[in-house]
Image (cartoon, rainbow, N blue to C red; front, side, top):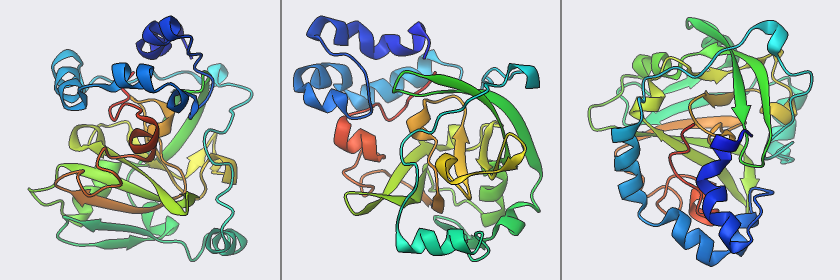
Length: 251
């Protein structure tokens, strides 16, 4: 991770002796955590005012792709259900599109292939302190939501996954600005091959303007909601709820 990306946390963390080395380390520092993440609603408002949410993330040439692209988060969900899907090469896997939509959908990988596809070579910046450049391909999330008929009352999109944390599916969320950003895709391919298990097979979110923990892997369900109040503990994502990470992890 480059210095500017780390700066939001490191500036205060340095004064408290906090070294950002992993996705749960900050949980051990309640004072720093309180300072860093106080006023979440104010933060959401400020980022909308200060950042061009429609700006594109940098894209790179094929020769700039990283020779090694590490995995972030879960490396294998390890559940019986996921193992069965994997054994069948995900032929029986379906992505549910539900919530505040006019036409709930159940999409196979073949169905997702019928949407216009976008390929992009972008940099993944992980909160653990590393970056890598890779190529991703899949339909734009916005196109899939349009096919489902997003209702006017929808404000956020919630993602639920096959990997479990504390016995519950991993979850994340983004707002409609990021959901309809042209670089926000449902990626089924990485570096011109189907996703492998470590990188989120069969489908993962790529929301290129945010840090890696927002890029939910092993997608199973995409739900449109009007509020995040009923999602987890109310902050919209697993790490946000349990380790006080920022809900908007913009870069």
